[in-house]
Every structure is written in C-alpha cells, then in structure tokens.
Length: 537
Image (tube, rainbow, N blue to C red; front, side, top):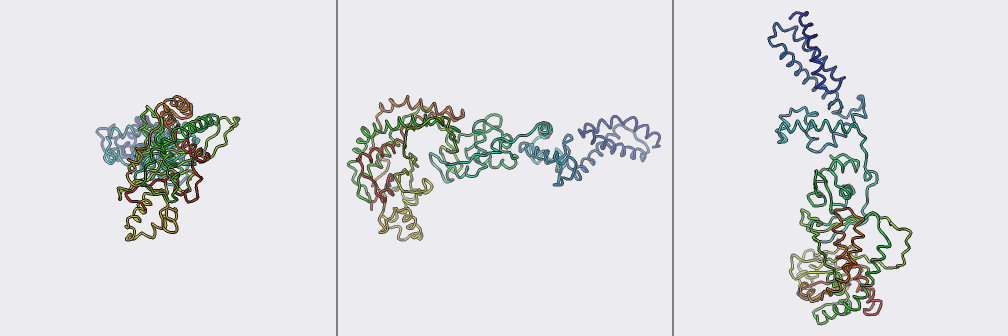
C-alpha cells in the first residue's frame, strides 16, 4: 500500500486507537506509549500489505496483538500495572515511585487469599483467564469479577492511609493461660495461644468481629503471614466465623479493668458463706465418710483425709445451678479437647481511690483435676493444688502416668517394666515415694464415683437464698466484657460464688480453730489429693 493512503488511514484511526489504548492501560502515560506502539505496528503492516479487505478488523487485530506484546514486555522489564498502579515483579526498587511500588505490593498482600491468587497469576504470571479458571476451578466470569473487585480495592486502598491498629503497636501478653474441661490429646490452650501472634490474632476479634484483612491491619502485618494460623485457630475452635466472613472468639480474656470494691464485696460475702458452711455443712460431710475404712493415709492423720473430702465437697457439691446453656463457650479441638479457655492479661483498677480493708491470703487453686487411667480401669485420682499443698507445676505436672506407676508398684508389675528406674525417679522427685520407698499419697479402695456419691450436696434452700446475690455480682461483672461473652460471665459468676475460693476459706477456718491440726511438710505433699484403686499399700 502506498504511503499516502497509509498516512490517511493512520489519521482517520488515530483517535480510535488512542481510545483503545486508554481503556487498556488506565493511565495517560501508558496510553500514549501503547498508542505509539500500535500506530507504529499498523503503519509498518499497512505499508507491507498489498490489499486489505476488512480494514477495521485488520487494525483491531494488530492493536490487540501489539497490546499483548506490550503487556508482556512491561511485566518482564518494569513490573505490572493495575489501573496505573505499578507493581515491581522483582526486588529492584530503583524504579520511579519506589514508595508507591512498595505500597502497591503491600496492598496486593492485603487482598483476600482467593483474590490475591487470581491477581498474582493474571498480572505476575501473565496467565490467561481461561487457564486460571481451570487451575482454580472457578468460572471465567467469576475470575473477571474478582479481578475487577481487586482493581477497585487496590485503587481505594491507595486513596486512604492504612493505619496500624493498637495491637500492632502494643500487643497483649498473657500472664496466665488456663482451661476448665477435658484436654484431649492435643494439650491445653497454651499449645494454641502460646505464641504472641496467635494470642493477638484471637484477642483482635474479642471486642468486635473482624475479617482476615481487618485482623491483619490491626496487627500491622499482611494477611499472607496469618492465614495459616487463622485456619488452625478456626479448626480448633479458638476462632468462630460469623456474618460477613468475620471472626469472633469465645476465649475468656479477663476484663481490661476491675473494681477493687466489687471484688472486696464479693470476698466479704464468700467469707460469710464459708463461716456458715464450716458450722453447718462441714459436719455433714465429715459424717458421710466416717465409716469409710479402706483408706491409706501415709501419716495416719485421718483429718488430712477429711480435709480433702471437705474441699472436694465445697468445690463440687455446693455450686448454685444456672439456667443457661454454656455449651457454645467450650473450645472443641481436633485432638478431642473440650474446655473453656481463659487468658489472664494485665488489668487496671477502675477505682484506685478505694482503700481495701481486707488482708487475705492467696485463694489461687488449680483444679478440680481428675485423672483416669486407660491402662488400669481401677486407677483414678482427684486433686486440687493450692497453698495447702507443696506440689508444683499444676495440671501440666499432674500426670496419669504417676498414678499408673504407683499401681504398678503395688501390683508388682513395675519389677518387669523397662522404664522402672525413670518412673521411680519421677515419683521420688514429686515425693509420691518416700526415701524408704513408701507411697506418700492418700489412697481409697474402690470406685471414685461411688465414694463421691456418698458426700451430701449443699441444701437447696441455702443455694436459693444466695442465688439472687450471686446473680447481682455476676451481672455487674459482665458489664466489663464484650456482648458475646456476657452469658458465660453471668453463668460462671453465679455458679462460682461457692467455689474453690470458698473451699480454701473453709479450710482456713478449720485449721485456725483447731478442728484440723496443722499440716506437716510430708502431709502437704498428700494434701487434697485422693487416688482410687482396687488395692492399697
């Protein structure tokens, strides 16, 4: 074709080609570059062509082909342009607008997982939509929809200032992680919340539900680095999905603030309850086990046995019943665990001007701990660790294997055990065996279920009299917690008014008024621990 005709065609199609370039590049600078490339290719092709039947179709085919080559070239040598936002495909930040390149790459990382995969394959790997559709098993129309949404999200993200949340600047630290319930084979909540990132992921959704992207922004990191952890936490019940792909949690974090006056008022009520129980309920408990003769007590002190029974009774037979279904609060792990998980963090006093009149000892207690052997059906134990016992390590150090080892000693099985030395050393370390190889814990012959059934429950009238007060304290406390936790706080608050704290208060009364003699150091090893077996030492 002669040059004069070609010049005429180029002049005629210039505006259309430029419009095509604008639509494809979403950037005036890129549009001008692309338009120049297309015009050059059209011009050269027309000069070489002898005759063109469908001129418009011919020009658009060249335009599409040139655009494809242009995009491939840009991806290889400069990066990827998404509506004019440039992403470097290699770690070379010597390009123009270095900060924008970094920022865009970060914003791509903030896209949700599916959208991020599609963007990466389309823009970085230069894969056609049809290929991406087959690879991901998603309809081509859906791929296009995700790409369009990604462009809009990226442009929106670029127009605002992304802020790092409070936890990204000042993450919380766990002072204590605990549980109430059955652990299964996967360990306690420490196994899932022990690292700071997992702990703060769960805490980030405690006060308000969040998407993965919102969690990431709160923590000041990109979703790429937390998606696996979120999946693990969700699969094991520590995160619960709600509406709009958001997560919440039923892990019990203590309130950010507490009222010392409210705590003191509750302790005063519990002290009154303890005095009443010591006077009216404890005699009934002691009487219920008076005729139990098949008991082994290392020191021979029957009071040590009765004290353990009293502590069990108050912790298990005196709780005020609650009319709330709290099953949703149990964390159910893939390893068979089913428990309420709680985390203690730093908490501030909301009434620092209040001066407490109470000078009370520690009411910390680890329990009720129950251990049942899968090897020996007769072996079972119950215990609570507190300041009345010298045992260390709480539930983590309270192993079913220890009671199985004691049973093996009593039955003679231990003699042929290849791990005999190791097992004996552990029992000696825990002081469950004395230096002269005597068992140093209390043992009851028979089944635990039958033994505990003989202990009377607290009178229903007594519980009913306290139910209103218990509910009042619980509802006041619940105000400091997020909405999804308030049923648990109220339910547990009512049930726990008479709990291990009151049990320790009762023991304080019984040891201070001479009902029980002071404990010896050896008795502190065995205090509030009962092992059940079909054979005694």
